[in-house]
Image 1 (tube, rainbow, N blue to C red):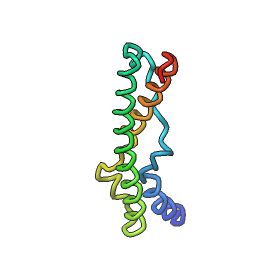
Image 2: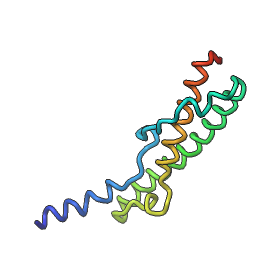
Image 3: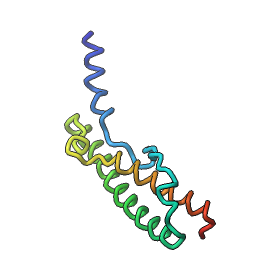
Image 4: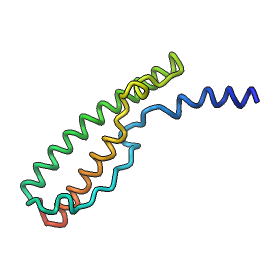
Length: 110
């Protein structure tokens, strides 16, 4: 029992660490959300959402690095505990980018 408890105690903080942005699965955003936009508007929207995704990804990488450092030093993923984990926001932004790109392809935009 003591070994099992110790193993859970050691592995639990690792499970709570922030994921890297490339390991986050996109949320399914329907193409209908962007079907009313024309090609130039879709292009502007894509640029905006890609910028947001880039900024969030950088924050997420910082959180993952902070968690790794915190677990190494203290045994606790500090960034995840202090709200630095942006997994949900990145998932939505990835979904938006994919949906906009699919809408652009469906409309024949360049």
